[in-house]
Amino acid sequence: MLFASALSGSCAPSINVPPAPDVQPALNAFERPTADVGAAIMSASEAEIMQLEADIRSSTLLEELLELVQSVREGIAENTDEDGNLVVDGQSFESPNGLITINRVCRGHDPESGVVDPDMNGTIQLFMPLTDGMVGPQVWGTADACLYEVLGEELGYDGDVSLHFGELIDELTDLRNETITFVIDGVLQIEDRRVPLLQSFRITADERLEILFNGTDLGTFIYFFEADRFPQGIRDVTGTFGCILEDRTCDKGSDGFSW
Image (cartoon, rainbow, N blue to C red; front, side, top):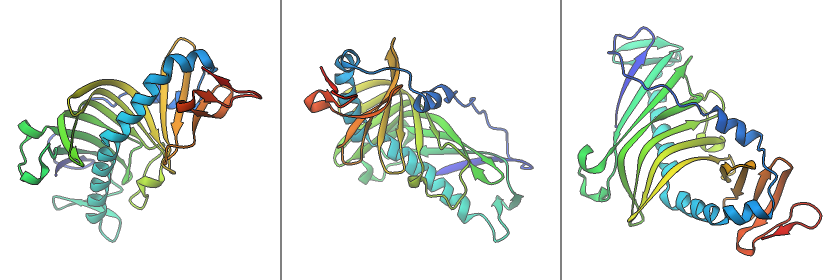
């Protein structure tokens, strides 16, 4: 992995940094959904929910990004001296503020070959801000035809991505115990399928997958899957209730509804 830094007081060359995408609308929608979900919305959304859940889990894109951020955080910890100063290229920064740029060649569809070729495998570039030595709360960047392989399945992603941790993260924080919001705008490749996505997802500390749906004129809602797929359900303007897509039922209210 190659990464360059631009820290306060550094003599490093300036970095052309695209502005961080505005993820606040997605964060607001996760906290305050506006739809009152019933049979009509679920009938229109059922197929998309099932396909998105399958695509997100099989692609492991979110896990790939999280591992990349985690590896850089470990690098920051390894280069922090006993006084808490970050040491970069022989320079010491006390409570550093600035930006770390992460450039990585993707593993490709044949990771065992050992070939590291950006033209063949694609690349990821992420921007990680530091505030008083802490990361975040937002990390953002672009994947350029990034290809990888999981359990023999050929996968890839091309487009923009943001990760939001909700707060500043210090070097002792375990990212897997944090709730992380992902906002992606690009194309997900799963074998020979290419799936355009402009979507927001959230992984909670207990590994619940939450998918934000905002394509309805009736408002926004969140469909969630626990780590073992069941139970599953919805958060909408009225609260949280369970659903079973396979049975096409939800237990909302005294009687629930089906579609």
